[in-house]
Length: 323
Image (tube, rainbow, N blue to C red; front, side):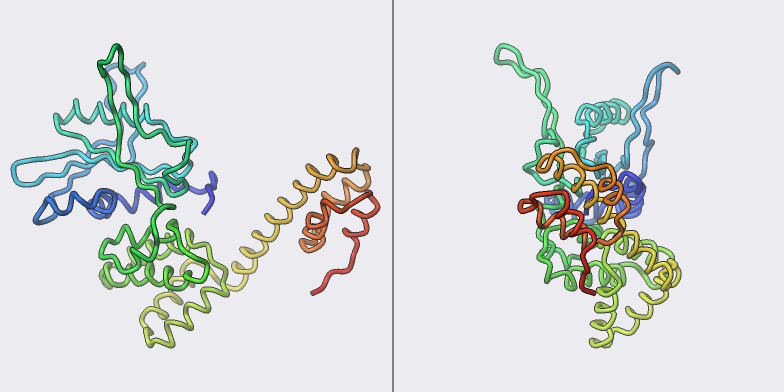
């Protein structure tokens, strides 16, 4: 799913990490779970660095937690970066240094990247300073590049964070139903029935990030009814109603997606066609900006390399389209 600055992804992920810190840690660094016989005691700690003077700036961290296990303790810093181009390894390092100084503990930083792969040049992996063969600084962290992970590996995971993050992982289009079911079934299996509000909140998380059309939700409900999981379909119906997914909202949601595609098509036409045909006539430019038929706009784009005149563009915009 692409980055949308209008959506508060930070709060969505923070909610997930705050409520399931050990799952978030062991999903990112699974080897940590093998070194403990049971989960440590987790305590949330201050999210902002303390200022010595009012004029100083501070660093706001996502989810720092203190993990106590028998006689030892560690600090884990769980961060989320939905837009990889906004990631600052220097800011992360400042947060780690603050935590280490404040709590006198080893600090393990973890950063989740929903929209970046391990090959992304936008994401620096380490900081290093050296001179004359001597290294004066080395800083790194544990990155989680969700786009690189195969969703099928986690559809039956007993880690709730892994199941909730399935929408961001890699899977083929024909696997959508299996992956969706893995996420939703994970909520029903690992969140108690008595925690109805929490179930609804996590379902809403999946609803947003799977970003499916209603035809697929109907297909999924039919699939669950076929397999006699009535409690799942009943819960889905209830939560959809609670979230306001009535016919009017569904129609508006679908119309919004279509309008977005039309706007993108209009922008591409106005950008690319003048490079091929020269200055665009004012009347035709206005017609393109006012065009509200997605099929006609896409027909213009599909014929981009063959068009020889603005008259041909006008003909495509006014052509009859199949229903």
